[in-house]
Length: 511
Image 1 (spheres, helix red, strand yellow):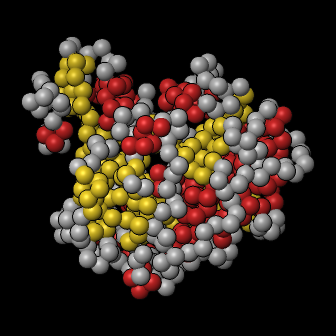
Image 2: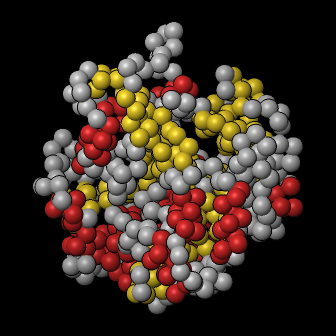
């Protein structure tokens, strides 16, 4: 479809072979003695991860977990996440990765909505928040992270999911403001793992820096997935800390990374001298990329950041900037191009008001996508699933442009989604929490440009009784994940509205 892709990169042809096996099969095919993970300074083999996964699968079988059942996981970037993922798949079950930043109220929603039968979580979720309340959900068993290592030995599982079985329910915010479970089949994630392996030219001689959180679609596909299909070991360090990650990148001779621009800015700001000459393939996505940061990063570390674009619904990338190239800059926004379409896919710009009308290069419209990476719909939401597509194309909700050479740019969002540090925040969820405060009469939430996070959450509130901005921020902080609560609260007498009574969000961003 895009013959010019071959011109841009010899490593990513216009077409690649569709996957013939799942990521689980790719993982199990690796030599047991090979290193799968560098966990801080400790090397862990494929055989050790596989053994843990089979032990977990046996426990899930004893608990009655069957193919198609959901198992939710709240874990950080640790080997336990890989054991949980592959153990769940060894039962043919569906993994529901939950953000490690969610609070109890948010976790309870995801458990109930997914119908998870088992919940695997960090010990502190119970210790820090009291006995976790699971009434109202389908959860029958809870397995703490500390209990995984103590599971008894088990025989090899005979269950294997197929390419058309569901691998993940990855929750994303939707047009109603309620998180929706994006259904990823094994073939979707295997395809994009191979796309990214080809883009990175990844082999078992590479080392992947696990900077992105594993529970995020980027971590699931660009880190776990690429590692499985290439045999490259994955560096894990519980959670991202710039100084420690730089040390580990140097120690383990990392070659590949894909992370938010926020993480790269944190690395750039961190002091110290490190030999990072092995680091040659670097990508980012999820937020606008300032060209100045790319140049500063290259000057400091000798590796150029390549922009990408993707969504949970397309299982990470739909556009990539070929390795070795720097994409053009959008003259209007000053941001880098998001890349060119991945192999086997079609990307186009359509009229936001009439998706049946394709727009020519240079015209602004909505980005629409088609290809083997697209999700299978939203969990238990047929109406929302149907609304997300038009004539086989997924409507991203992002407003963009394609230039004559085939480069794509994001210029705005059709939706009011905020992207803070690469994480999506739906304003309504934050507004709903603010409305729980007895002093709040009206609340509106918007995203503000932020040099570090890409965007930060700002709340504008009108009060019915006295309250300070600090009080409202603390109130939200107790009830929302760290990336969701407002960092800025502005108290006004009256929130601006349109003639029809809707909040005037454009004016909020200027307040």
